[in-house]
Image 1 (cartoon, rainbow over the protein chains, first blue to last red):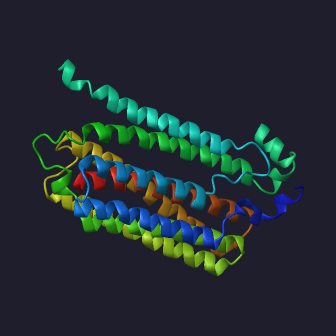
Image 2 (cartoon, helix red, strand yellow; image 1 turned 60 degrees about the vertical axis):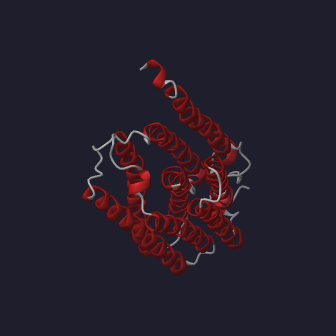
Length: 110
Length: 200
């Protein structure tokens, strides 16, 4: 623990080639799946929206976990950036969801 | 502060600014996430407000935005490979992967600029409708981030070429790769919400 400052490689020690290749392949598949459904119109409108959002969120997790190594803690300290990201996502969802919800009353007040 | 004390026993910061810099950079990414959430909210509300002009379905070109997506996704992957080369201390491989990442990123920006130019030539300017205002703001903000990333990448390549792999450049490349992966994560939602839902 005491000599970690002398070893720059420890900054990001958890990535491996396998992890990046896996992440890349999963991302490709998760990009192609909604694209094919949209181009072939093989689902209802709601079905398409659900498929697009589910694959997008899954791919977001691939980036966070396999590429950005969000689970990797720095030298045993509290997991600040993981907690921050959870808070950030909660606020982001509140901004987007709340705005759409509030503005859905637009027709009623005009 | 507590974070640094807990993590380094108040000693290592002279040699390696890594952990506290990383935490600070994560906080920047999270706040950037909120910036994008706000303009996504605008787009989600305004995307139907076309003022009688052309909508997403008429304007967006499937091959172009799909190519953009694959370019950025692949560049996110190659920036990860640059990180691996860095960890192994391979300077030449690190520089090569950074060059490939930069070329892919430049390809993405080139396509986006030509896409915007075509839209404007079509009369779909930023002031045409609320839909187009929110579209150009959202996609343009992401494009500005990518452009900044390209400039950052070039300065990193110059530094690594001159000074080699040391604690400082290692830390900088680590932060850069986080930034680049983050931009791809944001693009996933632009691809899904703006383009895929636009043309479906």
